[in-house]
Length: 476
Image 1 (cartoon, helix red, strand yellow):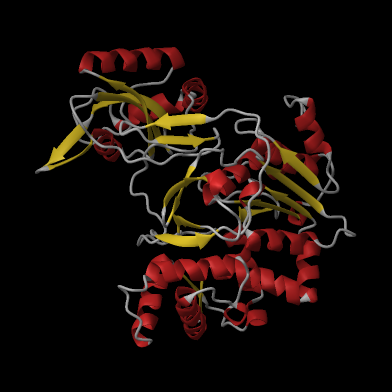
Image 2 (cartoon, one colour):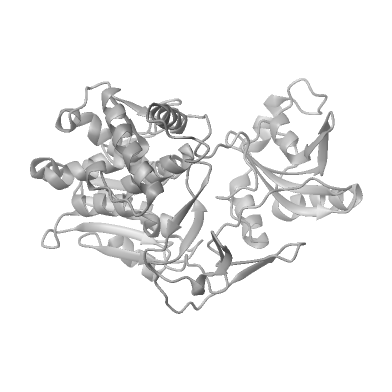
């Protein structure tokens, strides 16, 4: 059995085109990531490329971990299965996020950027505390100039590779943000610290200006593979360009992406003057209100607009109050769940240790006078990692019907993940054995496909944080 035996002709061609630049465009669920992992295995196993000459880049630690596990599974005969608890053994292959890869480079090249070896990374809480301290020193009123908005402005400049020296202010707020930006970078340097945006900016600027370092990493990583290429920002794109080298080089750059992640006509965009259809916005003049990435909203100016024909599905979501949301199937629409009434819900729950199960719960649980979604308590009780709502039912009988039907239809258990001291028929040992003997991953994938769900986008995860929360990010 070969590495391409179950691929279609287009996928097989992408896997086997080892040398030179390759662009793979395909929609969701079409096997883009599978092609990428098969290609890595093919390069090592069939083309004889050294693993340490390969760099694969993803956007999340979870995706990087899963990619490594897939490649290791494909090449188990070469590397051998790791012992329980042992780290992956990929023969020097580098797989990671943009930030984790940049952190590795900067740890090695610390002296080139003028930092001490033990430099630290500030998370969002650290950054916000520093900005607030600097604003107090500079006598800037937090009520007038939001520290989060200023931090967002600093972040956006770094993602465009704009240093304080190159910063240009388009208005008074931008001028204030620029002054804080200068002091902020000075303070980070004094504390021997960087923030996450610095990891990208400093690595990219180092590769740009230092030919010796640039050639070193071009020779180290002669084959670049990038997942979700359409999501790269300026700093990430320029980092890849620096590593790939000039067009006259081999440029063994392989990128996969989805060109249809667009905003369709009729989509309402928030502006300072109210919502407007996206097609009415004019480049280089209109302002929009956007998520800042730091748990706040910020104003931004439309810099350019690209328009093209779209031949595909459009998903329309209509709310009870008459609002209409339009998007392509590749977009996620975030919403807040409001517990109400006597409804009961059938759900799919996931545990990283066990797999997937079907269950049901009431709409609400109460604590004192506060009501909150019942599925959140279920997830907490069972130490689950994610949950998807499958059916909203008018009573317990209907919920019991759909729970039984979906469990039987897809071969998914209804047993709880965690017994603990609860009076369940099975103990934790039997529960673990049950889930390990069932292929709930494949069953959940079939269910998700049939119901139009994305397993990559749960409806709720426990203890989730956004930028601006207090939980520290982890890079690997």
